[in-house]
Amino acid sequence: MVEVINLRLARKAKARGDAARQAEANRALHGQTKAARKRQQLDTARAQRQLDGARREDPS
Image 1: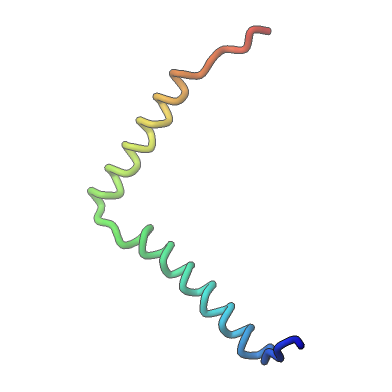
Image 2: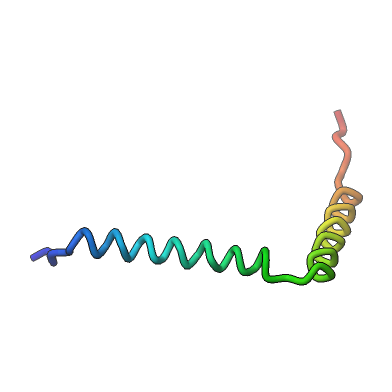
């Protein structure tokens, strides 16, 4: 037989999980110092430049 679920509890559990994921993302974004954010931006830009530099041109 199928187990009976209380839909209200399932909905609240899903909402708590969504809120926890959002909180984790916010901690990662806003929980950094200004220097750490700047370093992250520089690393991202450096990686993007390196990727663009290694890109092949279209032979068309």
